[in-house]
Length: 367
Ligand code: SF4
Image (tube, rainbow, N blue to C red; front, top):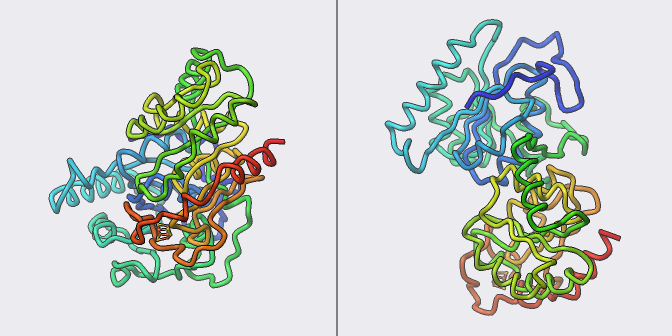
């Protein structure tokens, strides 16, 4: 996927230029994990853009999110679970990268691969693609294939952990907050799609976005319809999500007057969903990718944590954001991602996190 040339070549997130005392580096960021991980990789991408051209290898789903990013030169779409499965697919991807590198070798001193996702497949891809250096986390399964290993700091936000991959020689690199904010860049098509959707429903004023979905069932807070019925007395409710979230949108629709409800579920691309979230007064989300879209778009967010906790490093980053979770439950956290079923059967981490608390905090961040 070819991207438009950056308006300011090698300009960093704050417009900084590539230091002249460094050789020009080609960075290859390999991030084939989840959507949220890709969003949280954008600060690393912006940092690397101060050193030379940056290309990314990512999944078909995540590729669209990176459109228009001025820090990126090229996105390689790696369909590792379907069309490019197995060794043949890996080899084809590596060949494509090598050909691209050969075509754009002028002025480049070396290629450095950043393994933002720690699988062996990604590390093998970096080797086959001819990267001179491979930098990844010291805890990754493929760490023996890296030329440099960076500590995976449990006490840091994941955006910071990923950003620190850019500094494998500096044990004390301290990210400034503004450097860690992820960024997405919806274009004219995404803006138009959102404008059309809101106009279709007659929404011209403030609205609150709700994102009730999650791949992991135990991470889905069960009281979005009740919250929506309260929010609808004050503002329009807009539900965001993919087509798998249709049943959640229908449950919310049943609790809200039709003239106070919009469903964007399954109607927008991921990047357009980010644009929609960016226009909301606030977002209420589970510990899931909409939280990171809101961080990238600067929308205050309430992120509800059930079986997971903010300390894992995936909380919201936009100003005035808040996190909520059961205050006293010894079984939390019970899983890195959130299991499909509560292993104890009671699911108290979510069932006992009531609407009153979420609604009170929501009112406080939009007032
Ligand atoms: S074990 Fe505890 S934290 Fe895990 S899903 Fe059940 S109630 Fe939630």
